[in-house]
Image (cartoon, rainbow, N blue to C red; front, side, top):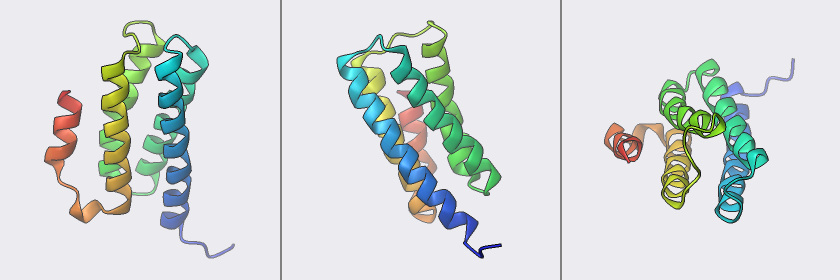
Length: 117
């Protein structure tokens, strides 16, 4: 066994997934009907949520679950990709990063405001 800190491994993986998510969202601005980009964004959110729950990042998992659910609705064709959806998801990405990197300094109110939008 390597002795690597699982929490740090999660943080590294999540940072990479957040980059994937951001790029998918930026690409969706130019190709809102691209199902592959929607699936890429969904998978990044799904993995961040699942791994977060596994490594004890419950606030990350809870918050990300709501964002993931919105993208599941996009995948199902119930919601269209729009500029406001991309903007709120980018804000959510930033909130997820804060929840991972500075959980003790991140208030629930910020996340609630994003989810309400």
